[in-house]
Length: 273
Picture 1 (cartoon, rainbow, N blue to C red):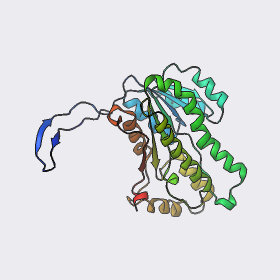
Picture 2 (spheres, one colour; picture 1 turned 180 degrees about the horizontal axis):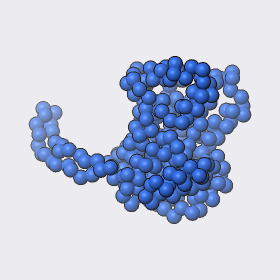
Picture 3 (cartoon, rainbow, N blue to C red; picture 1 turned 135 degrees about the horizontal axis):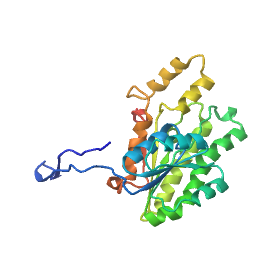
Picture 4 (cartoon, one colour; picture 1 turned 180 degrees about the vertical axis):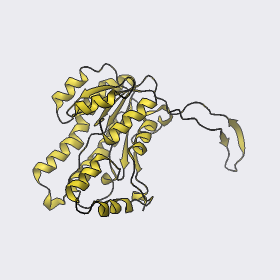
């Protein structure tokens, strides 16, 4: 899909006087010649991101624990490669990166959820959420760093509004997504000129992740709870994986080169309400 920018007017003063006019009809947010690795890339937001970055001209590496699903998606996308990766295992990550020669874009998308307040969250479950949602971002980013420094690349971390506001019965999940935001800002401070790193904070997105939650915890009242999930987002609907993927594409492009260390909510107005 080719995105075209319409004619745009530039260089106006505070009074609104137009000093110059430009016609920008070139393609926007292109990633031609770029290589992107997406963790959790075989489903949900990760899969939509793989498709969107491919449309933008990138060569995508679909990193997922489910190699079969990654291979199925890779077969649909020109130039895509499936990469088996357990994002909680330094050995698995090292094995995968041992085969990667160049990298321009890293999207840390792999993640899990957990329902429970602080009194109903076991130490084992808390540790598991932190391993998948936090340790993985550390381990994969650290492994990718030499390649990204060489390419002056871009990192996009998929966080959540749960890192910005308290969400009922999501103690471990909120803690993990808050950590992702903090890591994003800290790396941006240490490496402000060497690469860019940003975090997207989605609201509730219609993915297998959400369907799994409904099936596990609310199988007897799925539509009622689904309506409640919709209602907490003022725009009146759940997000879609494509909503998030489009923002990943923009943040990865040269048009976004002045955005660094940012946490961008994309939540239908949830955190504005």
